[in-house]
Image 1 (cartoon, one colour):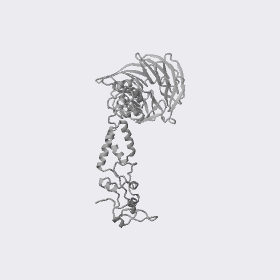
Image 2: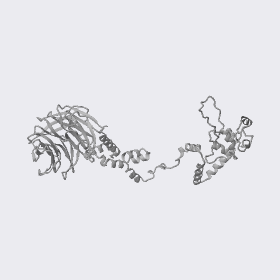
Image 3: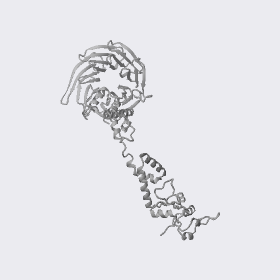
Image 4: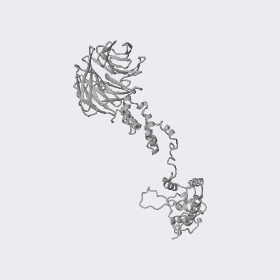
Length: 554
């Protein structure tokens, strides 16, 4: 059947102001489908969804306007149904959005198209790269959405064919030294994310120098002993340090401290409240009101003590562990030095020295080298020789029981129930200054080169300038979300303060901002004592238990 038109456009022309409607008889006379539609149907490129404007531009405007305005009949449809008008048609796929075919120009036949395409390809192959780029940029202005879609599929895998491996990598074009400098400005999270971009970035971001600088930053700093132990653990077979692993461990540890993520182990065995605790790499030592000292193994899951030291005739109030040497003070007014040796096969406990000189309870003591400093309810501070047990110096000045002492190579600092803190010169025994500000007895203190930190029965923690003696900070329950009970014990390092209280909690504070970081709750009675390092906190309580808070395993 021939679909070619057999009438002219004037058959459908308007006459004056009147226009004749297309009748059924007119439709029966002949097909008015234009020639381009006929060819489109034959060539398989007919598309009835093409917009009406394109159809009108390609064909007789009047005729096609009437044809497209005719609705299709619909049966058994809702009365609100709006029939869709059939659109026009799409020409050959090569036509674009800016190149509409003139009504008088017919598309080339398949043979003509093949001939023209072959010629165009020959021309294109003879062009230089610059000319080819110019041709392609011009062609892009004359193609439509369907051609763009075809291009995106066809060239997706060939976009960088023949390009250098790092053609899209701005860092890859830089000298390695400059790239390392850029990466050194990234924070740890960004550096880890950069290592996942590509293999080249992974190799660059895994360089030990980057992670070493991060590991040694003050924010991730560990104590000297912890630092050395970690480096020996993270040393590779060739003797180099895996600094990325070092930082990952420190980052996780820091995150656990800030988020209170820790595993808590409980050690039971004392029959009265625990008054003091100390620990080293593999054991915990605790003193109790039941007159005993117990040694616990941190490396096992046993809740029971390994050794029990019996020798004091009254409650044990303070202990200090240094290597295999343990020094204890008691309410029996004596100080004992114990030799505590332990191997995988055997253990030995011997009391080497007993120091007698205080007339009342020995409430606090500290050991450094061959020197012991103790404070007592007899209001005195004494300095002892560790090996011989002889009293070398007695410091008098407090008007009430001495509850806490700390010292270094040239000074002793003591706190007492008279609400004062005294700074003594170690060599002469002279009191250099007296700090006042607490409203009740000073129960615990620690200090470093610049600052004294103290806790009191007034439920506050105070920070003092060591040189001037002025109070420079106060942590209380009203302004700092502090403790609501008596402060029994505290300890500090370069960036945090850890405190224990009768309110059954342990609190961790940021030393610089004095902001409370976390509150730890697990004891069922007041927390009397604690000690900590970079990885764990060990605490004792009136609830007769010792607890190990391990931040390295979460």
